[in-house]
Length: 67
Image 1 (cartoon, helix red, strand yellow):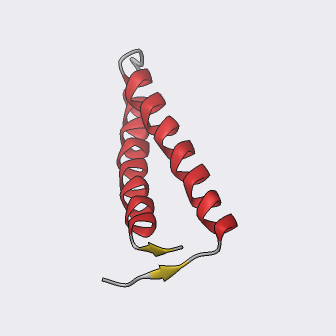
Image 2 (spheres, one colour):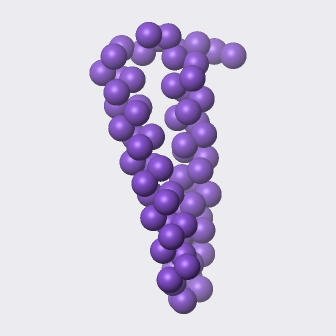
Image 3 (cartoon, one colour):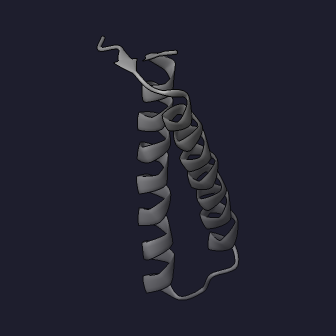
């Protein structure tokens, strides 16, 4: 497990990105229920998968950070 040494402002940026991606994921999940177009629904599902992956990676970075 690699430890990352981040400055305080970098840690805050990671938190901001994590919050943004969480909101994006929530919005994609919610809006899929309202979408009827199959192509748009597929795009939203892909966005959901990518957001989930990004959230996991950001959480990993933050959990292995040295402050």
